[in-house]
Image (cartoon, rainbow, N blue to C red; front, side):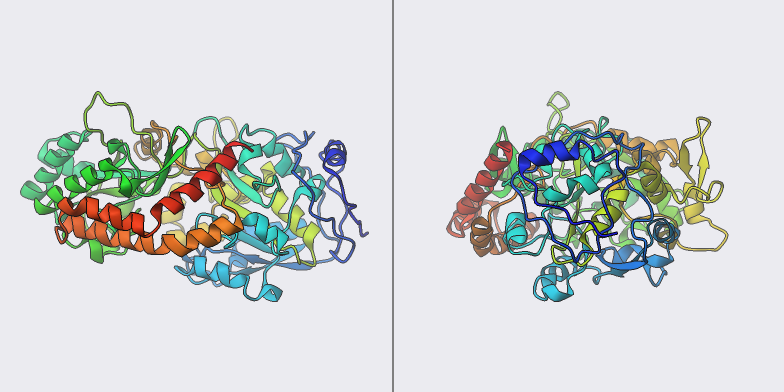
Length: 557
């Protein structure tokens, strides 16, 4: 039976949605009925659906089998599967919803450009798009994407997305984080299941087995780090005591103790640009000194890493002493990935400080309790022929039965990919991922049984199944806040984006180029004022001003 949603005013919307959690979520329109017009500012209603407990949808979503296209940029996570529909989870979802998903997977490394190309041929745009807005975004901003008819304003459809609404009600910053500057709800954002504790899944990693050999503890200050890295070089002959990105600077984990970030950040609501700060120069002086002393990877600018994780040849062959890495790769995890040293043991380290008495650094790029949403947003094609079905399908991921299966494997798989704790909750079988009867590699196991970074990510799914010493890394990295990070949902207007694009690509390339030159001594740091003057002539202040305007609007939402 087809249902035509009528245009709702913001005031009527709030009243209408009060019923959203009770009725199972609207009709099953095929998309050829009257579509609601984009409304005003979104009014997040209360809901009788209990966050993470009650599934507010009715299944199957469609009485007739339909196909939805889904842009899913996870080509590096499919393992040896030929299609994500070989996943047990997505097969279960199809049976539950009666919706078949046709995945569109862009080439690994080309996701950002592939996303932009979707708008060049709108007739070929998929029904649903999984995006990471930091790199995959509409050039003129999300309000413009709605106004131009590409991305659906979800505001008039809140009554058929009760599970998502229940999560929005539970998150204090939702009204600022999930809407545009005009107050429109443009996508389904990703959350951790336990928002209260905060979460950091990447940070500084150091080889504990190397520390044991040189008789030293995990360093905490920059002076201690220099002593440890020197011992790694002199006593153990490690090629890259400290491994950094090919640009010379990682995502800011290691420089945070200088009170600066690698690019745009904020202090008390004021936007700053790292390379323009004296502290950034001081950090480059440190790195140059370490490079001259052989404490950095001598060929760092030839590597592939852009900030997290390392080239396999380096990490698997005892050529690295410390780096920024993922929590899943701590302790002995690299042994299963092919490490030649069977004693491989990496542990987490806090961000360094200049002095042990200094306050904890205030910069993290992502992943803990300053901002509640994750950097994933699923959007709906405004021209889809199956708008309501697409909305309901995505909304299902916010229901407990679905997100548990997405994170752990389907509920009939106890004893295979997960087992039950004493209180009945699921614990993923991490060993199965690396030692399964079918001999599948870890990436293929993950693709076959789980969903890659689903909209609700269960913190324990990664942590609780790990050995305690590996799980401890997450707690260490989460001890400092990311309060100076600019939230990913701070957005510029179409005019600002157009103006910003004129300047920043060249600025970023110039900064990356000169980071390398300053660190390697190819350019003297005595020229830093000239370098800053060049950034000013390239338009950095205009970029800062536009980012400031965007942050001000965000803070006023």
